[in-house]
Image (cartoon, rainbow, N blue to C red; front, side):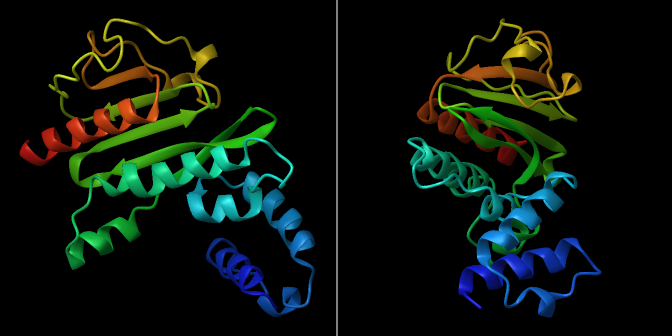
Length: 206
């Protein structure tokens, strides 16, 4: 049994209490992935790493690198912003993984719609990237009174047709009109990181 297959089986044990690991130890990796992919697709949300292990694009896909770039960016750089490097912060980070709540297609690649839950701040975010831009919906119990320095159009309503993979109930009006629930379009990852950096600084001081 390869190391990669071992991880797949460990993942499945967490999501299927009736799973029999021994029955899969000698199965081909491709066969395991196909079966597990079908299982997870019907049971979202699941943690991002589990989803990625069974949905990796084939090697001949031009945008395969872009797929992994955005996933690692969200998991490590973006989600990691909101936790400190103490032992308790590391435990909290591991206890609140980025979730995949839905999917969408771009460049013939199946991509995740991410959800980040910041429980200590009573705030959640839904995010997607289609290799062109980012869409972010924020839901907060408190107003987000942040100067985002024109990182996005604060008075623009984003129609649900442009938020691939979002449910209609997850697409809100503009930031200018409602600072508790809003949806924005951000053009590149540097602007997205800055957006999250400013948001994190605000939440830490609140």
